[in-house]
Image (cartoon, rainbow over the protein chains, first blue to last red):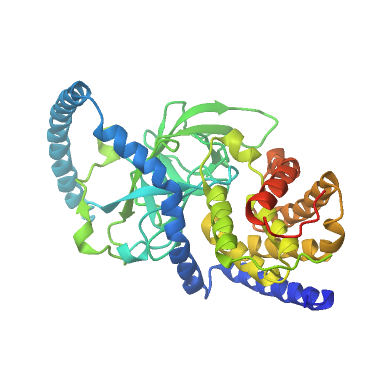
Length: 292
Length: 165
């Protein structure tokens, strides 16, 4: 009938060893991509099912909107488009000028980075880590370490890739850091997550750094993971305490970390990996440095 | 006292799928902190009710799926689940004779052990949850056990010889 207690104990011991091996391999991200990929394929339907009510709600509120709201929205979009077009004209001129100047300096002009839109499938139910799951995976050419952004700035990077889904770590997670530079003074530093949404900190910033509240910090491109020039956040507070070796610089991220439903996956220009061609498009290059 | 009857695998599978779905449903922070450990509770329930169909191996597989769903390192929840079922099986015979609140106390201890394991692993990986709210599910699991036990007994095991009080 029932298995004896010692037999169960032995099985538990075996499973414990198996778990330890799996955890070690998974943590070092070696050899078990196939297992992870297979598992994530199996559980993907469940994830879709859990988030289906949310999609349904979004869909119905969208289709049942009144005509007036739609008209008003349309009008405001027209206005916005006109405004953006006007700005774009100026930017195009600046871009040309920038290219010419770079050419003069004999440095390669930066082409536009390629991007792909992905939807958030799920936000990590664990309230102590800032991770999201996206609906694009290896089949779309997503790779580990790929930067993700939204309309306003850098969101984070991809940490795990499955065949159709992928896991992204947000900027504000305690284990995330991104090399940045000040758009105003060019001071370089590293922005690390604090575990609180909407707050980053600079690591090892001394009181002699040329930083001021209100400074825009952009990715510096050092570390070769994030392409240079994407906004990361604005400095909101600099706390100088003479008892501490470093000043505490608090940053508010530019990206809408709490609100983003759609994100952009970026293939930095010049990276060895290429997205599948039919699903991508090119962004007009906007150089943050020049607009300031 | 025998309660070694068979139940269709479908019911078990569906209930576990439901528990897994609950564990990844996005809630506002307060509610997600108060969510009981549905998967562990169900594993305890099934392993004491159907010890023939349900062992540590099955629990380990369930935990592996939970790891994949939650994006934690593979093997973390898997071993926690196996641990829970191991202790549930060890105490199984005594467990069925306990009054319901004493059962809930046992459930609390077993789930606390699993949470300590998860806390330890996350700490090793450098992601130790710093907030005391991490431990709240242990309390809510304790409180929900009597309700879960009686409702599942009457729902799923109508023909069974169940020795609950």
